Length: 495
Image 1 (tube, one colour):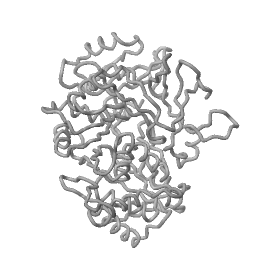
Image 2 (cartoon, rainbow, N blue to C red; image 1 turned 90 degrees about the vertical axis):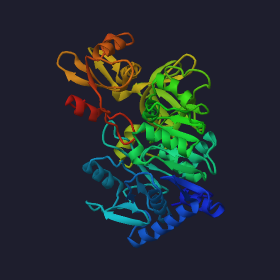
Image 3 (cartoon, rainbow, N blue to C red; image 1 turned 135 degrees about the vertical axis):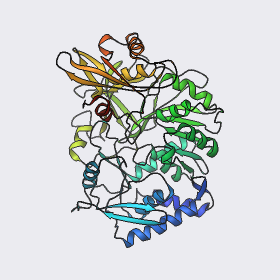
Image 4 (cartoon, rainbow, N blue to C red; image 1 turned 120 degrees about the vertical axis):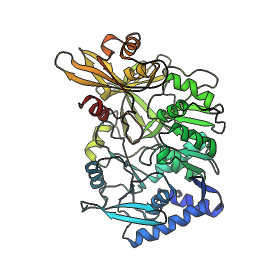
C-alpha cells in the first residue's frame, strides 16, 4: 500500500526512525518510554501474527481501541501488510458498528493485548472484502455521527504525507517533540497528535481513558510529561481551568483547539495557565482535515467571535448560496473547501454525491467539500462561522441559529455546558429548549439565564424552557456535544 513514487509509507517512516535513532522515544505510556526500536519490534511481531491469522493485503479490518503502544503497533502492522484499518468510535451501539463494518467490507476486528493479537470474525460475513476501498488507503476514519449515522472516510497515504509535512512544519514537530494525544483514534485530530508525530520522529504522550475527564489528573499529566504541543476540543481546556491549577505549564508552546467554539472567558484564562503557548483555533473536519488556522495575537484578548483565520497553504474555498453559486464580496453562504489532504469521497457513493461538488457545472476540476457550515464574510474579508445549516431552525417564522444561542449561554457566569434543541410545537412550529449544566461561579438560575439571553439575543432566540442539570452532558466520541442524546436523556424527546 504505497502512497506514491518516492513517498515512504507511515509504517516505513517509523521503521526509518528506529534505524536512525533506535533509543529515541516514540511514546510515553503510563510514565515509561516506548522507544522507536520497541515500537518497531512490536509492529513486526503483530505483523507476523496477523499474517498467520489470515489477514491479507486489500482486506479491510476494524480496530476499536484507545491510543496505546500496542494499538498503534497493531495499526502500523496492518499497514505493513497492506490492510486498510477502519477506526470507528468505541462508543457506537452494536447495530451501528455492524453497519459500518459491512459498509467498509471488514471481515474481521483486530484487538491488541500487549504482545498478542486477537482477530474476531465479523458477526455478518462480508462477501466483497474490497468494498470499493480506494488503493493507497491506510485509514478509514469515521465522522462523529453528531447529526446522524457516522460516515466512513478513506484517508490516503499521500494525504497523510502531505498533512504531516504541513503540520510538522507549521507547529515545529520533529525528532523528540512531545505531543499530547487526547482525541480518540477515530477522530481526525489524531492525524496530528499521533500519526504526524510518529511520521516526524516525535514522541506521542497519550491520555489514558480514565484520566480524560478529570481536570486534576490532566494537569498532573501535563506537568509531569511536559508536552510541547497540545491539541484538543474546548472541553479539555475547560477541565484544566476548572481544576484551579496552582502553577502555570511553561512547556507548552502551541495550544490548538478544534471541533467547537471556545467561550471568550475560557480563552482569557488560557494565557495564565499556558504562558509560553501560541493559542490557535483550527478549523477543519474529517473529510478535509485542517483548512483554516487563526492564531490569537499574543498579549491581546481574543476577538469575539474568533474568525476562521488564514487558509492552510494549498487550500481553496468559496461561499455558496442556496443554489450552489459563489457568493462574491461581503455576505453569508455555505462554506465549500478543497484541501491537499481531503478524502476522495465516502465509501457510500450516494453520500459522496450529496457533499462533494464542483462549483461550475461542466468544468473538470477536483470537487469541493460542502461543509454544511454557514460562514459570513465581512467587509474586511474576515470569515466568521455562524453555525451549521442543520442547526438553523425557524421559530415563529424567524430563522434562529441554535449554536449562536449556545455561545451566549456559555458566556453566562455559572454555566459549564449548554445545548439548545428545537422541539415541535403546535403553535410556534418550534420551541427552543436549553439544557444547561451549572458549575461554580454566580448561580445560574432560570431567571438569570433568561435575563442574560434577553440582553443579547432577539426575542425569538431566547429559549422557552431552561432545564438545569448538574451532571456532564452527553458527548460524541470526538468530544462534541451530542444533541440527540441530550434531548433524549433530559427532555424525553428527539429533535
